[in-house]
Image: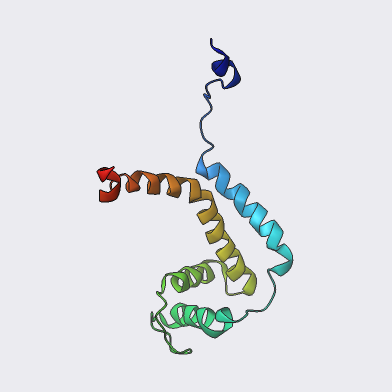
Length: 129
């Protein structure tokens, strides 16, 4: 074996599966935000997202009636309405659902960057090199 091989042995470890990483990240994120989970809604939350999600929960309408409609796509509101339907309507449920979403994004970041790197190889600019 040459000197560089002794310093950098091959790694046979497999990456940690996402189903292990996601709960750990979720628990860390919830632990850090624990004192803030019961705070009242603020700014965009109180003015648009929460009323729009509540309209979706109670009336099933994608276009909100209790707040002026704007160009926001309804995916976040639908996610919150689903969380409320399953777990009940409360500030803690809302904030925990959003923390679960952020934990999922954080856990999938390495996967997303690997996918983005592979897709960039398909671009015409990359092929021209």
